[in-house]
Image 1 (cartoon, rainbow, N blue to C red):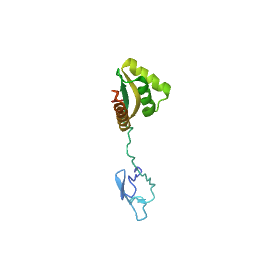
Image 2: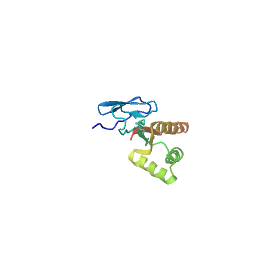
Image 3: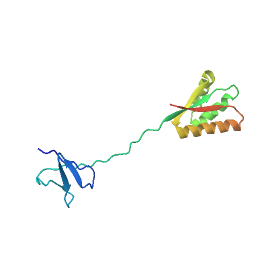
Image 4: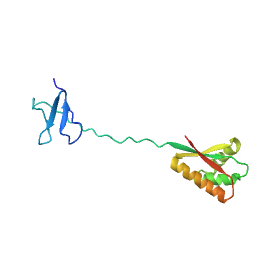
Length: 135
């Protein structure tokens, strides 16, 4: 008994069924020269490109003894869309523990946020520091 024939790709001329090759006739139908009444199965295999989730990065804020707490809260509200309460909680965490997570983003977004924070801190003559760490 011969197994079903499988057409590997749309428009291909040859398919393979067991040990007997099949050929499409002029109408695009599979034909078996040994048994024209045999059933055929046509399968089109399409592959999708593999997509991966991008790597995520934490934006970390580092404590210093000179940047005013209110400025840190402002930065968290402005660049990380934190509410006043969330920003205050993060600021206190950074103040007490030395470092705190502002948010988790793709690399490009994290890098942009760090640059924006550091630029604003420099413009206001504050030594506030932020870094990126892979999540």
